[in-house]
Every structure is written in C-alpha cells, then in structure tokens.
Image (cartoon, rainbow, N blue to C red; front, side):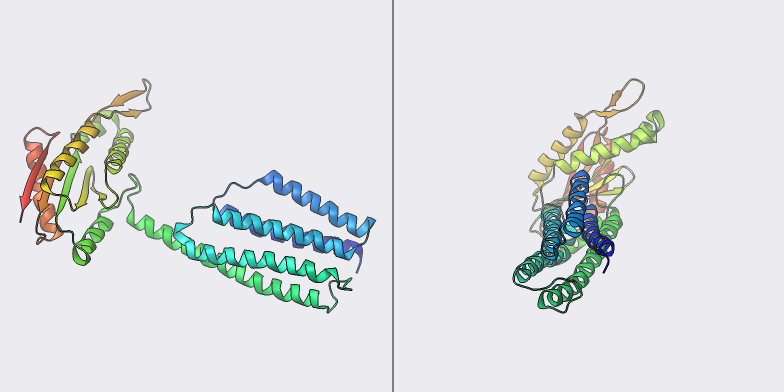
Length: 327
C-alpha cells in the first residue's frame, strides 16, 4: 500500500475520532478548546508523517493513534461528567461506559502490539482482528447511545416547552393544574394554602410604558415570587398578570405571613427598564389566600374561594391580601 494512502487513512481515522468527541461536547454545550484540538491534530499529523516517510515504523505509528484515541475518549468522558445532564442522564451514562470501554480497547491493542509481528493493518493477526472487531462493536454502541441521548434530550425539552410559560419560565396553567391535582389525588398534605394573585393596574403599565415594559414587570414579579418559595411549593402563571401559588402543609397563620411577605417584597422591588432615562417602575400585587384543613375540596373550589379573596382585596384598595379559611 502506498505510503500516501496510509497517511490519509490514518488522518481520516484520527479526524473521525476527534469529530465524534467534538460533537458530544457541542451537544452537551461544553466549552470546546478549539486551538488545543487543532494543535493536537497538527502534532498527530506530523507524527504520522514522521513514522511513515522518515522512519517507517508500524508499531509507533499505531501507538500514536492509540494515544490520540485514548486522550480524545478521555475528553469525551470529561465532557459528560462535568455537564448538567439530568434530563438525559441514563443515556449519557451508557455513552460514558462505551467511551471507557473504548479507552480500555485501545490500551489492550497497544499491549498486544508489543510482542506481535504485525506490520500491516490488513494482516489477520490477533491484534488486528481484536481492534477491528472491537471498533465495529464500540462504534455501533457509541452511535446508538448518542442517538438515544439526542432523542431523550429532545423529548425532555419538548416536555418542558409544553409545561412552561415562555415569558416567565414558570409552569403554565395546564401544567400547574395537573401537578396540583396529582398531589391532591396521590399524596394530599394534611393542610394546604392556595394563593391567587395578580399585578395591580397592569393594564395601565402596558398603556403608559408599553408592552415590553409590561413583560419585564411580569418577569421580575415571577422571579421575586419564585425566589420566596420553598422547594415543595408550586407556582404557575395562571393567565395574563395572574399567578397561582400552591403551598402544601401551610396553615392559615403561615399563609398570612408568607402572603404579606410576598406582597412587601414585590412592592419594595423596583423594576429597571432601558429607556432614554434608564428608569425604574414600582408595582404591587393583590392576593386572595385560601386555606383548607381537612382537605375535602377540589382544586376548582379552592381557586374559586381564592378568587373571591382576590376580588375583595382589589375592592378594598389593592396591594393587600385577603384570607379565606374553609373546612
């Protein structure tokens, strides 16, 4: 086989390994050291050229390929381990196992070459048979795991898109309803409180400042509300400028304290918006709070009670919370 063909084939193998790991890193949104990889590929091309045209040595030519592949697979493992992959953790772990198996395979290949008389890739020697069969199996498994990982991530992202409100990044009405009803049906708390709130005079904010400022106000209020909640609490955008907060194991006294804490936090936080004067705008919220113990009411009934409380809060001047306790 001409030396040029050997050089090109080895460079293609090296490049394919690099691109595989590059693709994994990009998929995981990992910062890729481009110049590092470019430098490494350049060194690898020089080494291959050296062991073909200057010192034609099959053993060291293959050892250099093994070193490249092992390092590349190690980088792939690092990308997976250091990335946030909670949405597709199972398939990512499977891919990491395949990459680790690939590293072991390359190392075994190097050990087998030490005492082997192999001088050509086409020879039917044990090292060649082992490496080509192993690479075929590992390549198939790696591609399968990557495809499954892509599919799992796409499903997770579509599921999140279907559940989340794009503007506030909170649960939308449908997802909020399903989650609360699931809790009430499967594992209902001993006592719960529900808060229905909306932003006071929100229409005037849109009319006076524009809908872009109105969107900023919605986002900032959502951020404030979410930052004040406990891990087991739920919050969703109920519609327009309305938000629904579900507080499991929250008594009437606790709900009173928490609702007024939310109200004061929103009222005391100015929303910055970019304009000619770089201005700030303050807003307030009105809240209807319902507490039930024991839980013998449906979600619709609780929301209706909270809605009556919200209506009363607005009728009494806004920027306040009204409370309803039902049994």
